[in-house]
Image 1 (cartoon, rainbow, N blue to C red):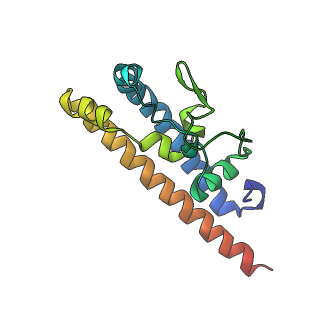
Image 2 (cartoon, rainbow, N blue to C red):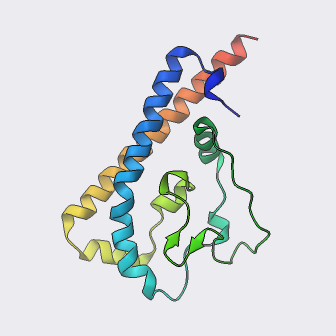
Length: 154
């Protein structure tokens, strides 16, 4: 686990800036995604939010780790069951704490709805997703650089 306390002063500020940037982007993109979801998801017969998608990948774990949060404990449910964090009103986790795949996955009906709708919100969504991907890459780069520094100091 990478903790901010172990990070050099130079990288610490950069990582904190990236984390803040990601949080702001997630807060900006969330209402936009939720507006699309509220129009499509209630009418869907097959829930996309499956338990198998609830688990963090290695980059998600890094992100959660530098935030100082713990990876949640999961119930013993089938991977094909609806996600344990899925509530009647959508995901119970704030978007910035979800596995990244939960933010960028869009099913076919949702994609059709977005493409058929006004272009401006869709372009904004794409731009925000691109910014999130870039900042996640920057976070990974900063943390990998920090890991190399820590290994060299031993």
